[in-house]
Length: 264
Image 1 (tube, rainbow, N blue to C red):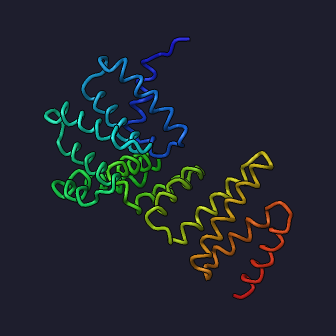
Image 2 (tube, rainbow, N blue to C red):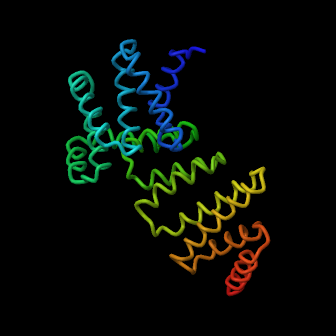
Image 3 (cartoon, one colour):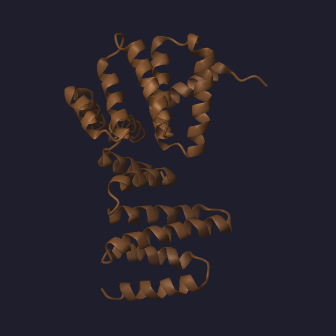
């Protein structure tokens, strides 16, 4: 059965403009990367200049996400050569800064952004103004994080918005992005533990439920490893442990939690 290329084009442009790729699983990322490159190879002559720029930009992001820095640089150079005199050079600068940051050259990234930070600041401001509209706020946060992927506050805000919608897997992904930069942020392990517990309540298969609870317990224990006086983590751990399968681990952890919670 032939594939409708118009549908493929619309889907890829939607992914590019909404920034949904930021929350893709590895499998989704690989699938869309292959589909995008196949489409560009065979159909880029059917795209207008704006569409072509958007899909090249998507290729750039996907290359960075999958760790293909050389490919990302090649796409960036092509964008600069082909569009440098047709689109705002500001956008090209932002992509350059993202590339430098991804490859560990923070000094160069900072220099590029310091040359003209207006778009970045404006994007953050527009994101803040859209808080009253949950869906729009999420889309604006995703767009902004494509420009400033190291903004841990924005990642936390995005995680909170996903949690409100009960999209706990996406919320967990966002919080884990923050922990890459702030590995000792024990309150974030609390939140991740809570989200895993919520996912366990929705799980249909017994095996899936117990695996999610194990993940919840692991996150709470990591929080307590960093700060043992965190009562909310003890409470969350106790709730997750109670739902675990019966066994020696459950019995031991239950006793420890009860002792700690009885102290105050």
